[in-house]
Length: 135
Image (cartoon, rainbow, N blue to C red):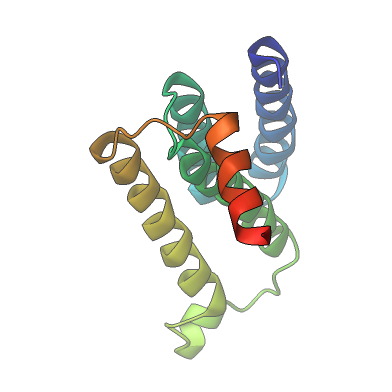
């Protein structure tokens, strides 16, 4: 994909996220967490665009997952009942497990992107490997 079109898509997604998450924050729940999670996700996307090695796709995947989770978390806040589950004693919730998993994947991808600076194989090398497997 053309790098300019990728930057345009990232810019459009920042606009949609700001409109959606800020609108919910101001009008409904006043919880900053969805905005912070989406911000970390966008930092991951921008970092993945800036580095060009074989591990950038992990960082891109983690950033996109965090943005998707921020929208899901925002949706949960918009539709939560009056009594909070935390008050009832549910400390380990599926949302917290997903959040911690996505944060782990994000930081693992960030670490991998800077530790392993391997160059991806060329197209010819990939085709040679594929044809050797099928023979």
